[in-house]
Amino acid sequence: MIQTVFAVLLLAAGVIFISIAALGVARLPDVFQRMHSATKAGGIGACLVLLGVLAADVAHPVTGILTIVFMLLTLSVASQLLARAAYMSGATVSDLANGDPLADVLGRQEEPLEERIEAGRERDETAEARAR
Image 1: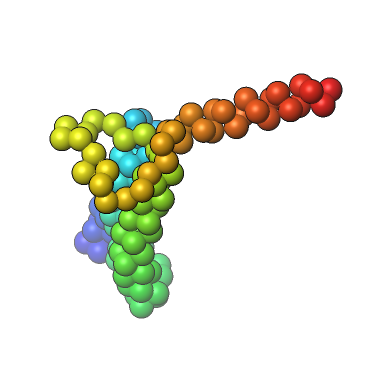
Image 2: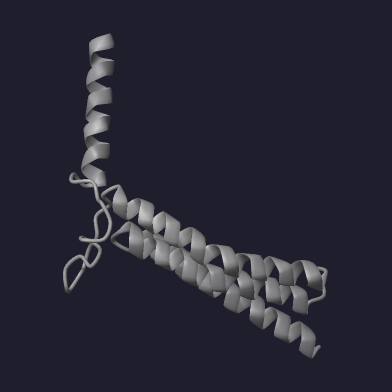
């Protein structure tokens, strides 16, 4: 009985963290903040859900523990590499109180990513109009 209650609490906590991560991805203003929400709260939520499944004796413990370890090791590395790529491609950074600390460290596209995407769409629409 206690084991079941503990498993349900872990599952509920995991679902709450995953919901917060999803809300952050939908509502935060820039790619870096969205990525932070997805990797931190999403990773914690997924680990809690896996722990809840393990506590309920649904999955084999070794598989669950290896999955959690793999997630904890790879989420931080993947988010770091994605953030670096987004920064270097010119993604908009919002709410920097002290300026851009990476300005002298990493090369960055001059034109913001969003403007380049919009310009590409306009070129595609113009090409389609000419083709008609």
